Image 1 (cartoon, rainbow, N blue to C red):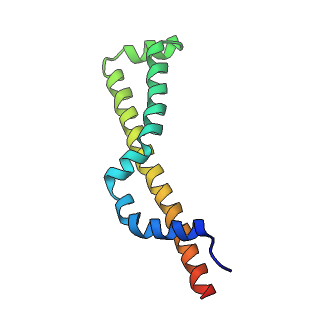
Image 2: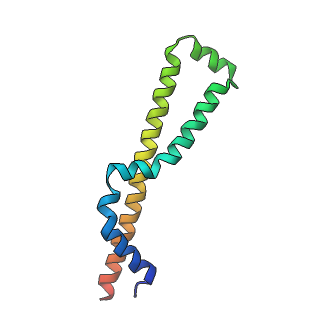
Image 3: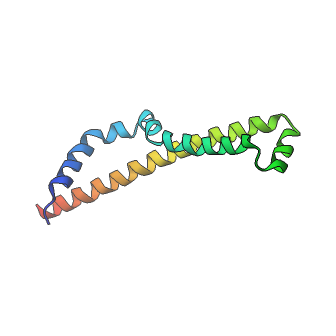
Length: 106
């Protein structure tokens, strides 16, 4: 089975960029918008005070806000790293499959 032009272009693109996309800077850039959106929603919900009992419990101890902020930071880091590595793994798997198909047809 022959490769389409799009698949050939992907192979060429991934051969050039696979090392660069695995670096930490690219991983941060890839997952950061989703992580900021999710943590922003949590942050807004937390400070809106819609669940008064939770707000009262958190405000009993002043470290509650710090715990929420630390949790948000951990959520951002996890989402950024996980989504970037997952995307890289998907592209790498597609690349390996296309190479196997190309070698098989040759």
